[in-house]
Length: 455
Ligand SMILES: Cc1ncc(COP(=O)(O)O)c(C=O)c1O
Image 1 (cartoon, rainbow, N blue to C red):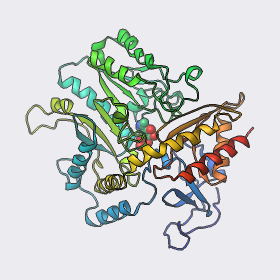
Image 2: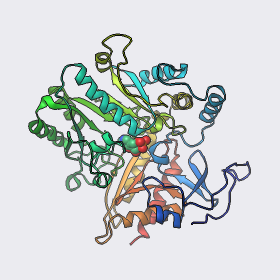
Image 3: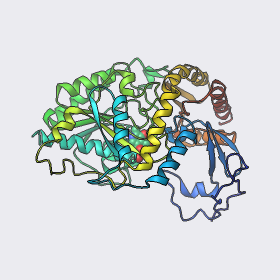
Image 4: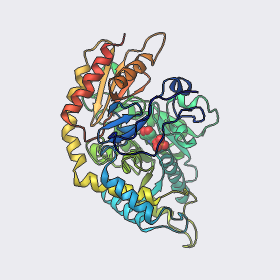
């Protein structure tokens, strides 16, 4: 049993809070966490506002990771909070199958205005993982509807992260995530990753070398036959594996190979979407049109869980056939298009537009890049890479204990009041897009001190 220290009431220390700090952490099994270690020295967040968290023991923490790459407009934005409060008082839940509610349609129409090209339909989910599995299923169903019944192989990429559903895990390429689960999808293959440190280390923005890594798809086509491959899914910028920015020309080449062979291209924009790259979506940032696109996280500014899949018109239309009284896609979730999530998303999109958050992010990303690369020359730093408001600072792993150096840096930053993430030996930095110039400097200065203090 772990005892958590003192109770702090709320962000301001003065407003009241109904949340008592627990003194027994045992029953809760935390996700992607070293539970036993965590419970010996827990880190609990009590309140948040703008760029900052406040912990249960009263420490103010600059959020250098936007929660989990999600709180793009900053925390507890009044407009979103009030929209959710109004919604929950009016309609808490609406039956989601053969019924709906107005805001689902309003939100889909708003998203359609933002989605690239002829991507004009939206299917709602509750998370990134559900969005990925939904996109993969739509891809499979599309080929079945077209009579291409042999197109069943799904292609991901080494080091890709597509959530934790069986589909997303199978196309994902992070071995540690798969090791414990020896019964994943089998009609799956993986492109090589795009990480070429010997050629691209310390790149600013898109690295120069590696577009030809997209030709890995040609080998996969040779192995399986082009007419057996349903879809390729990639994160435009791979996030969770430690920020891998696509080389110049890579995504274009992947798109061309998919086009040549009738393969659908899915962009997993769960992290990249909603301004993280200084554009609405990575598709726009790179000028490459995907066939399907997954979204989550920044869609509601993480205020309420929600995901979505954007679908191009021909794919949607191919499934809208048969008798009109027939369900077209045997798929969906109890909480697809939940009223609270829709209210949060509509308010979030308003905020992004009214405060021109994506445009401002594009401008302030220049300072972010410069600050990130002030770490280039530090001992133990073997690479710094970045695009938009994503940066990865890779540390040399300790031979006897890989990952431990980054964990120590993470803890030092946290103790100094800055929250970053670490994955393996990469420190990932991805703050809310509203971060100020002085906060950018403070974030990287704290990270620098933490790296310097770590042997
Ligand atoms: C690219 C990508 N896809 C999918 C997911 C899974 O999202 P969730 O954790 O909401 O299921 C994530 C989560 O970080 C992600 O980064």
